[in-house]
Amino acid sequence: MVFDRRFFLAALATIPALAAARADDSAEAVAAVKQLQDGQLEVIQKLGQLSVKQRYDALRPAIGATFDLAAMSKTVFGAGWDALTDAQKAEWAQALGDYIAASYAARLDGFNGKGFERDDKTQTRDGNVVVTTKVILAAGAPMPLDYVVRQTPQGWKIGDILVDGSLSELAQWRRSLRGLGDSGFAASKATLRQRTESFLTP
Image (cartoon, rainbow, N blue to C red; front, side, top):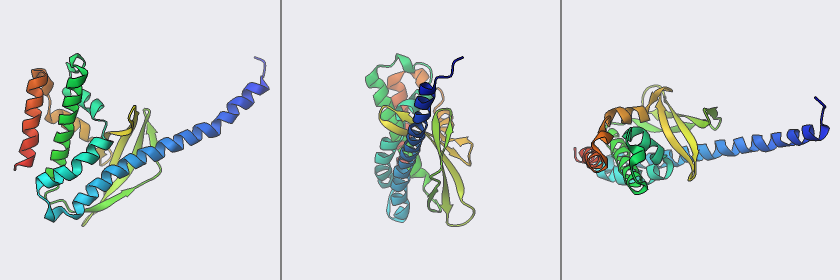
């Protein structure tokens, strides 16, 4: 093989650009997590003043802006997702976002967290960026919370959250809603709405 100096120099010149792209990806992934956690922190700071429904109303915009609800919906819905129309997929993703926000709002009862710490150094895993954070508790050791963030046509979005580094929130939602998609679009969406309401009207 003949050494081509021009090719070598051209390839070498791309290294800083690639490194900068990775740095930008990392920054955008961290920004998505920060946006979600900032929204959660506003609710946490006023927890005693808010009803579950008010918490839901405050959390829902940040979840819609930062979660990859389309991909999450495909995972949770299961078989039959590809047979849905684009409009049905969008409706189901909206309903899943409502469900997630309501479950978060309900789970904040008795929450003793004070805030979050984020590590700006990220890891790349299977093409995704993993953002490492911790929940700072009022008592006890901080709880690790890692965010799996992926690039989508709408920007960098959160695809999963790993509690203690390994417990997948997405897997938990899939287990909780297992088989829902088997009943078809209309019935599954109605059931999802009912479960959302059950969180909001304890």
